[in-house]
Amino acid sequence: MTDVIALANQKGGVGKTTTTVNLGADLATLGNRVLIVDVDAQGNATSGVGISKADIQKDIYDVLINEAPLADVIMATQHENLDIVPATIQLSGAEIELTPQMAREIRLKQALETVKEQYDYVLIDCPPSLGLITINAFTASNSILIPVQSEYYALEGLSQLLNTIALVRKHFNADLKIEGVLLTMYDARTNLGAQVNKEVRDYFKDSVYDTVIPRNVRLSEAPSYGMPISDYDPKSKGAECYLNLAKEVLAAHGG
Ligand code: ADP
Ligand code: MG
Image (cartoon, rainbow, N blue to C red; front, side, top):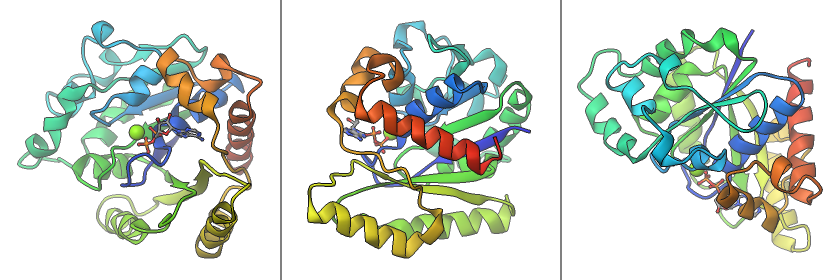
């Protein structure tokens, strides 16, 4: 069975892409076949795993809009067991182009059905919005992992996210679950960090991972080298924490 997990939070800069890339790489290192699907026009997950624009022939836009076979778009990465469906800026028009189309909410799901069996985990890196692309991601997924930045207003906007999840459950995907809530960019030295940690745990209870991702400069450097943290600096605190997260995710899936 393949587990499809969307990483979502309509706020930008909360750690969706960092978590997609590093969780994906660590799940792969731990022996799982992993596919990352980049559905953000920024293409940060794509560059984050070392794929350069010049090498991309087709991307997720061609799949969603032109019905290109997903298998033709998948690219291997330098990291063993880790593949990616890239995104480019081309995707920025897709939201509008999808609107009048047939089956517009289920296109990603249909495309994934054709390749899913080849993977143990598919991680979908969502854009910072709750539009049609995110709805496609939720419709295609078994669960949603929500990164929450340990900052003021951490919980702000999450009720809209939960509303969107409820709508997708009602119309397209009744079994959609919350995979977990991850505290990112945590600074244990500040009162704010502790306060946000408590607030998020009070609100989401057991859905919050024990693992918390600290603010770690190595995590912010790794993308410019096109490497997951486990390859860029395996001894860093960030690498250690993302590996713990991967183990926690696997344990939750009985692996
Ligand atoms: P999103 O995908 O939600 O927009 P990103 O994962 O791109 O967020 O993270 C936003 C920025 O913060 C990026 O520059 C990233 O490198 C940096 N970042 C993410 N997580 C951490 C962390 N734990 N410590 C330090 N920097 C981080
Ligand atoms: Mg991102």
